[in-house]
Length: 217
Length: 309
Image (cartoon, rainbow over all chains, first blue to last red):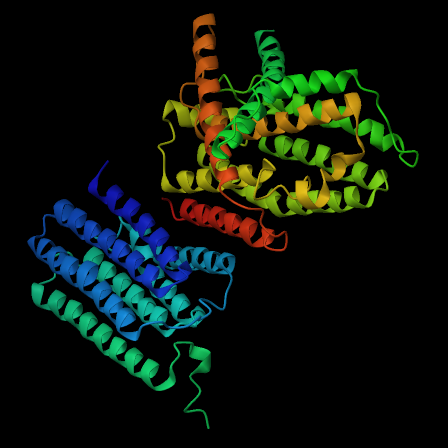
């Protein structure tokens, strides 16, 4: 089994874990599942680093481990802890089946779009590339279908994981500066979003996106 | 010739071990309730007793009512002849086709439901409707994973799929694993155990379509229902876990395959019994959510197959 096969298999596991993040009922479970998913992303980076022999990717996988697997879930869990009891927020506006259907359709459309691309770096990892593109839409699905704003933040994180994988797949030799830029950008976004969530909860006492109608004219 | 003997042997094997496995399930249930429980051969005793009883029918029932037990059992024997149980290939290839198997499962269900309505007993009618509901909801989830496996192996014959998997010509891909998970879940729903025993729900329906049967007919139906459970489990084990099945024809290999097959059944039935006894019945309105989620998993596996994973 070549390294690229492993990358493709990890990509499939990535789809399963991100579907679980979208389907998770409580934000706490979603945060743990997100940590698991980021673990798969890191494994993917390491496999790619071994396969392509790129030193930059090793560095990136280490930094991704600390930022994605440890830091972002910790920020989420800290936010959940700080808020205390959140009350019952309906987890999703769509049924699990519809979400699974949507993800399957998104995956297929992304594959159709990716298929004609004939870049030398992309030939062996077309399924993984389709999955990384599909993650953008899976994140979007999570944002659109979740009523809990904390889970919407996780949807944003999913989109970002997808963009990171695309970068790693197409440009494994990219200099560290780009990678550090992309990675830190994500951390700050999550911190700012979590602060906003905390303030929304303090003012409104709810996390349900449907109840946040204060600004409606 | 050997194939036909093997097919008949498989059918007899299913017929003979079916009450044993339902007895084992009862025994596990009793142990989980901290009860002594009946012997694992209790189902054989029950059937023997039922055979000596009188066959009573309600005066409103028609020939459908009399026809149903033989049709049910006959279909089960026919399926048992076709699916790969002891061997990797099907004993009778045209009976081992995915579509044939699914339709052979649908035929007895149709008669089962019809016979329930035929007796004019209200609870039996409700049980029949539920049986059809379960059937309609679970059939897509049974078909799609098998079709994904068929697309991967390049044949709709369950024997060909099993051979391709066991010999390693088709490497185990994620699409296949996901299809296996979806098929296992769909088979579990099809077993008619808790939380999905809609039609024979003991508390509210008192055996559903079975309630107007007695004596030998009831014995036949009870055997056929436990045969169906054995068949569903062996279908899953035969198609998705064909390891240890017989590849070459010899007496030694047949005995080994028999032992492996019975062990597989024992493990799978043990898992089913543990699931069955740790859940409560799902409300039948929620059933569709569960089955559609299983179908969603199957759709994911299909998507994985399409993108080449």
